[in-house]
Length: 183
Image: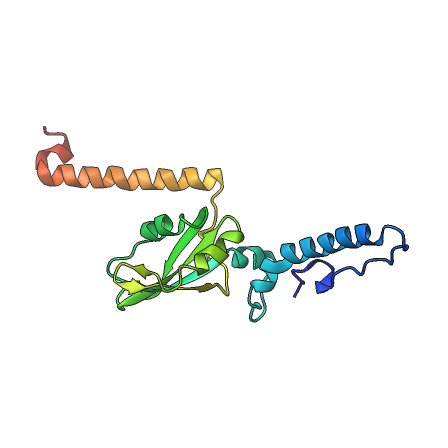
């Protein structure tokens, strides 16, 4: 598993400074170390990924939260999108779980990883009639495959053909002579 902390998790050891200007160099050296700690703090706050994780998905996983305890009958992906926009730009929402059960869950992927920390503060907040369960996600959202322009055009053509067939069927049911050109 590749390390999320530059240098394998170790901070660089500053080289000893000559005695002159020691306080000046110590001050700036500590600032560099502190800045390095700040930059890696969000990576350290993330729980370890479980199992064999595709390295190309790590960034997506780190930008995604699991949202549980959703009312199956009333909660929509659009509502979650609007709700979670208050903590950051949302890239994708995927509802999951059995719609016939009282509760479902969802995954919300943000554009920026910093939004995850803000989203986690919404754990326990009432959403409709239930308190949300918001946690780090252990996996990326399974997204529909992107279509090539040619595949999209073919799909559109197929859909339009079905629309024309449906229009013809409806028209024939309303006016039976229309189908045979009698009207």
